[in-house]
Each structure stands twice: as structure tokens, then as C-alpha cells.
Image (cartoon, rainbow over all chains, first blue to last red):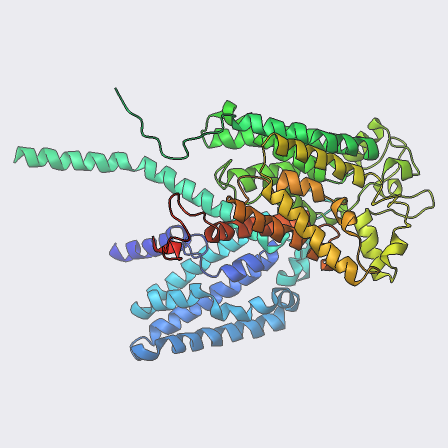
Length: 235
Length: 361
């Protein structure tokens, strides 16, 4: 019972409460720079997800033997080797996407979301939990990237999954949806300032939802307090 | 019996926000009339489109924010923003340009920062820059003055171009921009800039038909109109003299120095004054009390910086006109300017051996 609770908490933290994109605001550089289309966002999100799971697992597995003083260089080394793997794999199998992601693929090394998880969670917990935490944090990041990519692509050029064949192979050309016809692109949304504005709206929406949830909750809390008082008086 | 101890300032200006905003809108009328006379109905149509959008956007956000709707909706600030956007757009731009611009100005630049009085940037100019960056083609398709156009452009033609992109007789925006001799016309500022890259001197550019006898057919009168409106505002004390004065002086000095150094590659001072959005910027945009500097000294620096930036961008930048960009850059600098030009508190004398660093108080 306790075991599943821990995983539930990890999932809740990674996907919503402590989402690396919306709440921790980590890794903003790729988040804002690469999400001009949904395909790019998924590509970078998957790469980050993979690196995050592997680095969390490795950091957790060797946590007994890593001296405290030099842990950061070791974490960076581990993350960098996984990023290199991803980079070589993408270069080999999804070359078009590799080119459109450009410098942001190797820059995953410096994504603070990854080293943050290694430092804050993986280096203190067993391998299973650490990998699961990596999966959930990575999924949270991937979801934000996808949302941002989808909104920006629809607003900016009126399509979805444009260039999906770069990621999934030639059959994926079917996926391309033309939501509406635009004669001219809305350049602002495609350029980085648009990413900041859309991101701001996402964070605002998340805060509104959290507020609604918080408004619904206090009633229960009040009831608990009154019960305690009643018990106290009776004694 | 209660004694009210009010904090300073004790001397209030009695007129309300809406009265000042109305005055500013009236003052823009001469310029708008000149625009209508030389360029036709386009800008008036855009102004009305922008006003409708701005009011709808303002109403939506105010009701979402649960604010008092009637007083804030009709305080005139949204309407003034819309009027300024409508004035600055190319007359034959498509309708959605002014709709997107006005909605962006009100929702994102003004209301998301907290509404009137809290916006760090001038909403109209931020919207203009957003449009210019997002839709470069539509935002640079300037219509030539009516008297130079090969095709007639009635009110219905203009409306049709704005809504569908074609006149009633089926002419496109590109065809409308043709001169009788069959070349596409640009604004005077753009003409001079492009000709310089083609190796022509400024004097040779001045023979281009769009320049006319003085500084640009239509443009000189529009700027004269806004200058007149600005002087009216100064006389009514609705705006402070410092910003327009230092802006125009700074632009004058910069262009004069450049003109004296090389007459072939620099336009005259008055060409800079009476072209583009110069007078509109000086009297109607830089004087925005919210996004500008506050003290007299601060306003002098603010205006001078804006004038300098306008000249630099017009001369070396990628865009022919620069008022919107320099206004935004100066808006960014305004808090810093205010920080360093804080007036001394009453009673403190500079000669009075007080420590010079006011930050120590």
C-alpha cells in the first residue's frame, strides 16, 4: 500500500504539482526555442525523457560510491554520455529532426531539469523510484512541450504535425492536419517572444486551476478543526 | 468631526482621465483629416475597426477581472489607443491587421499588466511593433497619396480592399501601389533609404514623385496636422512641453550634424521632422504619462534619447521609420531614467552641504 502511494506521489509531483516546465521553470531555453512546431516539441521531449530516465537510474545506482565533493562533475559526465547516445541515434535514424533541433539537442546536457532531478532525488533514492521519478518528470516536461508546440503551430501556421515524417518516417505525412488556411504566418507566435507569451498563459491557467482546487478544499479542513474542538471540549 | 490628512500632492488637476483622453483625441483630428485628404478613407476605416475591437476586448477583460465596467470602458484610454493604432497602420492593410493589433494592445500590453496606469509599454506602439514583426508584407504595403495613384480609390473601393484584398473592380493591393509610370511607390523615408543602397544621392531621391515639392506629398501635411494638434495640447496643458521639445531638438541636432557632414547621404532636418510618424510620436505617443519618464529632467533625457534612437534607426537600421521601436526602447529605459532624475524633496537644497547621494536617505 505504502509502495503505490509513493509512486502516486511521484507521478503527481512530476506531472502537475512540481512540473519541470510550468512550476520549476527549468529548461526554459529548449522549451521556448524549439517548440515552434509540435513535431520538434515531441522530438526534443522524447530525447529529454530518455536522458532523464537513464541518468536518474545511473545516478541512483552508483550513489553509494560517489563522493559528495565531486558529485556534480560526475552527474554531468553521466548526463553528457546519455545525451551523446541520443544525439548519435537521432543523427542516424531521424536526420531531418536532428537538423531542425540543431544546437538544442546537445544542449540537453545543460538542461537544469535533468541535473536538478539527479541532485534532488536520484542521488538519495533507490533505482526503481529514481527511474520512475525520471519517467514522470520527463513526461511532465514532454506534455508541456507538446502543448506549447501544438498551440504555437496552430496559431502560427494553422497546421498540426507539420513535418511529422522527420520524426516518424514517411508514413507520418498522413498525420499532417491543416486546422485552418493561413495566407500569411503569424510570425510573432513562431518567434521566441510568442513562446514567452503562450508560456505565460499556460502558467496563468495552471494557477487558476490550482486556485479553484484550493477554494474547493478549505471546507473539509474547517470541518476537521471543528471536530477536534468538539473532542477537546468533551474531554 | 474628522480631520482628513491627505498625502501630497495637495493641488490636484481637476479634470478627469476621460476629459484629457477626449482632448487628446480631438487634438489628433487635424492630422487624421490630412490623412483622409491625401490618402483616402483607409485610415478612418482602420480607426473604426480598431475602436470596436478595443472596446470589445476591454469589456471582455474587465468583466473577467470583475472590475467596474462602465467607468473604465469609457475613460477614453482604450479608444485613444485604438485611434493611434488606426492612424499608424498602412491605409490599405487588411482588416484583421487592425483587429489583431487593437486586441493585442488592450488585452496583452495593457490589461495583463494591470490596466491603465500599470502598463510599462505604450500599448499602441507595442501593438504596432508586434504587427510589423509578425506581418511584414502587409505592414509595409503603404498606399501612395491619392493624387499619384494610377487607379481611382473611392470609399467603397477602400472598404473592399481592406475586407477582401481587392477593389470592386478587382485590382489588388500591389496594383493599387503602382505609379502611372508602372513602378511601385514607397513612402518618402523608404524611397530615400532604398535609393541610398542603390547608389543614388539624397538630392537625386528628392526628385522622386512621392516627395513632391517639399518633403513628401501628404506626409508633410499629416505631420503639420499633428504638430498643430500637439501645440493645441500644449496650450491646454494636457501634455508637458519637455518630452516633445527635447525629442524634436534631439532629432534636429542629430540630423543637422549628419547633414552638414555629408549632404549626399543624409536627408535634411526638416525631411526628418515632417516624415513618417515624427510629430505623432513627439506629441501623442512619447507624452503618454504612464509609460514615459515623470520629472522634467527625466522627460528631457527621455525625449532626447528617443530622438537620437529615431535618427540612428532611420539612418542605419533595417526599417525606414523608427518611432515605434525607439518609443518601446525608451519605455524600457524610463524607470532607470526616473531612478536617476528623482527631484529633491522640498526643503532640501543642493548648496546646503547635504550628502549628494540621495539614496542614503
